[in-house]
Image 1 (spheres, rainbow, N blue to C red):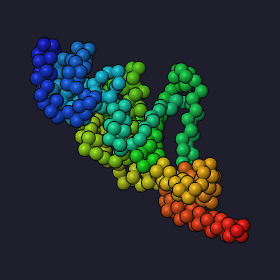
Image 2: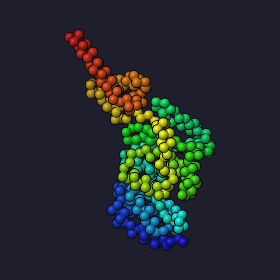
Image 3: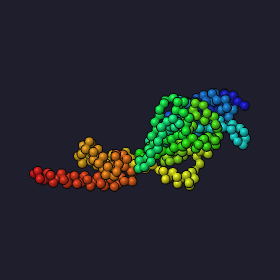
Length: 321
């Protein structure tokens, strides 16, 4: 039975003191705006009007704890009605979208950037393995209907260290997640592909360095979609380890190598040429492709080269004198 909207509004407004006190992102998440977004969602969703009032209050408080706005234009998180399997009652819960997961990761500096895309059957999609694994995704048409049926999704994550990792899920894997989801309506309609992206981002999320806020967000997601967040089996972990992308040197490390040269008087152009030769000595076309495990060896080799160059330069100066 739907509850009086005035009663719901009063219950939400009663959260003001606790919300303001406990909010973890006061710059972007203000109670005045969030309460209006929450009531807007309730008015637009009759099922939310039938939800237990306390569960709705708890869901709104989760917005404060997680620090993501309910602004529907941003798509970070949503209030969603769920049916209690035991009592049959409707409870409101906070559902974090894949954009919200990415914002949390970047805000907390666990990751630098995250890109998620859906693969369609007429797209050109390649996975290159080897010393520098990469994904190539070519789209032949802008209209998704012309691209055919969706067949998978992938997520590329740039960690704070500069390391890039990727996750790929095919249609069968994604459909298994849909089959055990507590609510199916979020998978249908024009935003269904958003759920495909969220599913693969959520798998990538497991690799992201944890902070207190990310741990809390994980708990929130677990109450809504626990089946997708199960710990991988030993076999899955072994498989993941065998296909782990090579960790390349970070931007900080390449900058350090470059500075070793410029500090000795080399011009920026000359330093870049030296680093290109250094990369080729390890079998790579670019210094950015150098594996992180070879960084110290490359640093030592560069130091030796600089010393040799300085010695030759000194000998030449002596001969010229």
